[in-house]
Length: 193
Image (cartoon, rainbow, N blue to C red; front, top):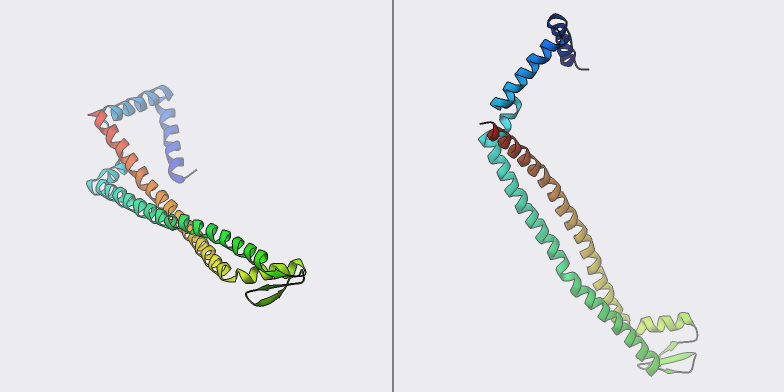
């Protein structure tokens, strides 16, 4: 218990001993009744309802709305190119499969060696066949790797954009809470007049 609370408790106990519990209760109810009928605002809330504070709250709400819109737009911009890149990745994967299949079908193979574009490649086991496939589709695989790298970079940017957007939303929540408190205090004061 704090020092002030201890003093209040001691004072209340002395008043109760001097005047009695019923008298103390009646006086407290009378004082509270007067406070409720006059709607006097406790002093610590006056600062919160000053014109400067209300203006600052309105400014904070405007600013937070602008920030939310800007971060939301940045988040949308990140996702614009993703669909195009995914379509490109799928097209490249299909091209690679087609190139590799055509190379195997059209290559001259005796089971041990395959000839493709006047070059001979070993073709006698799975490892050699995979190496041949990767060799004939090398250019498209490089392009695919670049597209996948761009998609990964977009994913990273989308995480950053989402984090920024969520941070702005949380920050705006404090301004909204302050505005709610001010609105409730003003409403409470207006009902007592």
